[in-house]
Image (cartoon, rainbow, N blue to C red):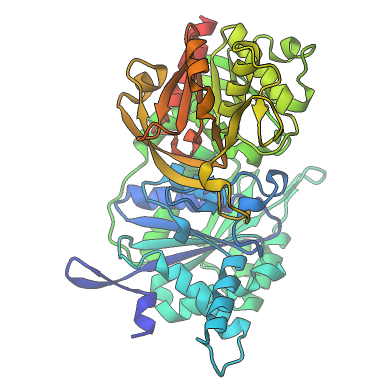
Amino acid sequence: MESLHFWLIHSFGMIQMTKYIFITGGVVSSLGKGIAAASIAKLLESRGIRVTNVKCDPYINVDPGTMNPFQHGEVYVTDDGAETDLDLGHYERYTCASYSRLNNITTGSIYRSVIEKERRGEYLGSTVQVIPHITDEIKKRITAVNESGDYQVVIVEIGGTVGDIEGLPFLEAIRQMKQDVGSLNSINIHLTLIPYLTSSDEIKTKPTQHSVQKLREIGIQPDILLCRTEKPLDKDCKKKISLFCNVSPDAVIQAINASSIYEVPLLLQEEWIDELIVRMLNLKSTSKRLVDWEEKVVSRIKNPLQQTTIAFVGKYITLQDAYKSVYESLTHAGIENHCKVHIRKVDSETVTPGSVESLLEGVQGVLVPGGFGERGIEGKIQAIQYAREKKIPFLGLCLGMQLAVIEFARNVCGMKNANSTEFNDKTKYPVICILETQKKVTEKGGTMRLGAYPCVLKNGTNSYKAYRKSLIHERHRHRYEFNNRYRKQFEEHGLVFSGTSPSHTLIEIVEIKNHPWFVGVQFHPEFRSKPDHTHPLFRDFIRAALNLKK
């Protein structure tokens, strides 16, 4: 019975095996395993196959919630309040599956679980070891994502590269899982680099050969090679890779560089990877091309009818992944509005009263994203003031909303030096203060206000016009909130509280009267935007920017 929970589910009155696709990477990191995993899920989903994704992160942190964005990139938040890897954002943007804390596994969470079991005496008499205890826990966590039996295929992405010492337990676990479920119910896909040398005008297959060799030393033979390349691979090259890596020639898949990440599913479909996977796993499916995705997403990205420029005023702009979901949401809004959104990245530390005009001159919108800490805060406030006074469309996310409140307090309400207690706990006007539920919290990891919460919208506001309904649910990640002590003063000066918690105790959205479009939200709408289903706030923000340009 113990072995059954690895692969048996009950569906339509029959016992049906869960199929697993394990994706690993070699040579170098950041090759795009997350995009590949999401694209494969998109292709299988389009064929009527129910798919979900799991990301295994080898780092020892329990989750990325306490990591510096410069090191890890953004923290993606799920509905159930899990702080996860940004690849879960790719999975959600490409597929219809619902993701939760079960979809992100870290070394830290695995070891914590095993140690807690050891302390409770569950391994009494045993020496706790990597094999079998750690690997068994990894396998248990992978299979747990489909305990309900909702999915036919589980795609498991292993972070890092083959050879990383931190990833060895995960690689051993998926090696064991292939034995547990059988070769007819699992395949290994290895993403590797085929570098192009300009000096000799040729591509090199040796790095891929060595990467596969390392994988085979661990006991894993890839079934499909996904070859990342900037030059097309001819038949001879594929045949050579096939021979030296012991895979079928038709299983050497070209993953050529794309102009947009949303083009990747189409390029992989041209390589027939979905047909190959369906055949290898003996899946029943329809045969369907991604026509809507090509026409309504990729074609609009490649052929915009207009363009606009948005100033993105942040403090982590030197790392592209730090604001990944926000950048993608702006792209989605461009798709919806048939336009190209040019993002002018502005380091908030460089924004001063003397530089703000030159830095923001000519933009049609200003966006201030979330973040933590005092660094760069005053520059963001200067940018918000510029957008408010110049009547430029503005969107503030989480911290961006809080700073919009501070700016309004200082320059409209006459509250000199108003601030948040996060930055100055002795401020005379603490217009932003810590949440009541956070006052006794001492631990940092996973303790913020996290996950999806309801919000009631005020009729007639820009927010209500965007959502076209009065009750919404959005994802949060914060410890501080608007201080209700100043609510009346703000309203008297023209600040509109257009979204609140159902009890009306927490301010979730603020707007400004007599402004073309000025919205600040306490939540993170970027976590709910998709390329074929744009978030309404981003859609209307870009629409307002286009109207300003006209």
